[in-house]
Length: 141
Image (cartoon, rainbow, N blue to C red):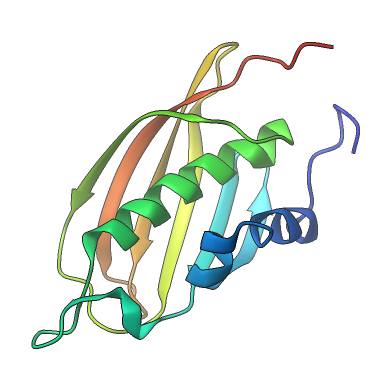
């Protein structure tokens, strides 16, 4: 992939699934375009924080916010970008079931970029949203 060639959905899927945590989350790339991405995460019983209520742990939602925003930037840069800062807002409890996340770049900068993400349940209800700052300087040649 050259500097002017953006990664394809298949490229991003292969790169994402190289990470054991992403593999464990069951991440699938649904769509990708420059600065935007949609992902899904396959439900796992280990996500439950409260067996009586069946709620998904907030850390799973936060991870999805971070990696979806991060990979929205990867769709534009073609390379990984470290998280500098992350804010997550929880809107409702996530019950058992697969999750869907959408991310997009808000501002692309020469050193720091901003991206946001939204996590939904299978019925399309917003569960969590967030915004992150990511380090995006050009790599040294």
